[in-house]
Image (tube, rainbow, N blue to C red; front, side):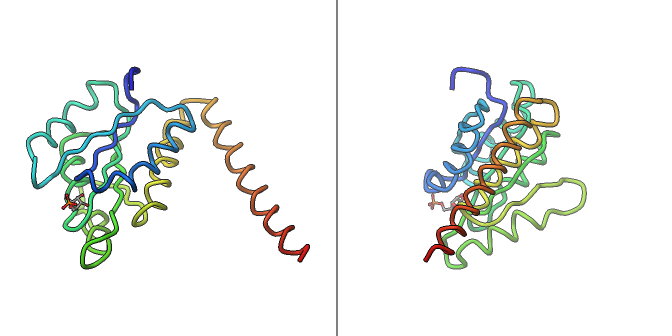
Length: 166
Ligand code: RP5
């Protein structure tokens, strides 16, 4: 993106991209400038730590980190920045994301990671959670979030009306 990113999305592998796009799509929908990067806590630890430690200086406000299996990415990123870090556990592998969920959510005291659900729902919520944090200091974003909820409510109502008609 041309504009300075407010949200930095880091994923451990390009295989995480289809899931992490859910977060990026939400950020695009709300007009939040973001940047997507691939960097692994295990395969490219120095690059990952540099991305995390340089983020605040680049104007980034929130980091979303998605990884699978022994998912240390969100925790490692959180250890190198005081920006809020939202973790997204990836599905797949022998344990289908439960390993990544535990790795992401079970942070020892002192270095928090806001862990979302496994997979696309978690990635989408990571995007929304980032927008909610930014909306604390942005009235336009908070209005857009209220509108998003109204639309969601209408959608459920529409589906219920359809069901009642049959
Ligand atoms: C993690 O290992 C990545 O985040 C990915 O979810 C998982 C598997 O990576 P690949 O073998 O598909 O590159 O580090």
